[in-house]
Length: 292
Image (cartoon, rainbow, N blue to C red; front, side, top):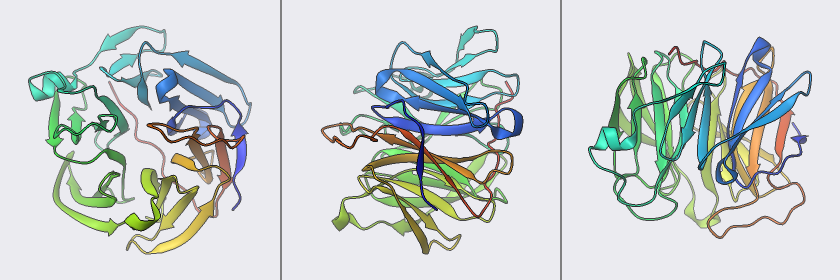
C-alpha cells in the first residue's frame, strides 16, 4: 500500500474526512484553521469548498442531504438548500461559557444516530477537554467526559459493542462498552510510546475490526489488530498525518488528510497539507448518518 496525492489543495490543518453520497464517493473534510470545508468526488473529480465564519473542526453527513458543521462555537446544521440552524453548544451542556478559547475537535455520528464530539483548547490547560454527546434528534447536548488531554479520534467496532477514543495528549487509546447510545467501562487499551514524539490523531475502524490510526509528527498511519497489536505501518512523505476514512463503492480506498502544521509545528515538504488516498486489501465501514 503506497499513498498518493489525491487533492493538491494545501490545508493548514486538514482533518475529519468522511465519505457519503452515491457509492460513498463524495468526500468531505475540513481545513480547520483556514475556516473551510473541502469536498471532492472520487470518480468525477468534481470539487469545491464551503467557507465558515470561524475555525471548523468537523463536517458530518445528514440523511436529508445536508450537513452538520462543527464550527468552534457551533455546531450548526446546513440543509441541502443552504439554510442553517444552530444546534446546542458546549455552553448549553456545561452551563457556562468556555473558560479558555476552545473549539470542537473530531466528531462522528454514532450507531443509534447520536453525535459524539471531542474538544481542543489549542494547547491551553483546562479540565473542560473531554467528550460531549448530541442527541439523535439534535435537541440536547450533554457532557460525558472531562479532564482529558486533547480528546481526538473516535470510532466503533464493527459489531458496535465497543467505542474507541484517542486521548492525544496522554498518548492513549481508550475503549468503552457501547450500548443504545451510551458508553461505560472505560479502559486504556494502548499506551503509545512517549519517547518517539509521535501523537495519535484521527482514526477509523475497518470491517474486520482493525484500527487505522494517523500519527501527527509520525509521517504514518499504523494499523492495529482488534486485540491492539501493531500489524502494519504505512509511511507518508509528510510529517503531520491527521486522519483517515474509508471511501468508494467497496469502501477499500483510504482517504488521508494531512497538515502543514499547528501550534509551532511546521512541515516544509511540498506535499504537506495535501490529501492522499491509498488502496487497501480490506473494506471499511460506511459512516453513520445524522437523521435530523
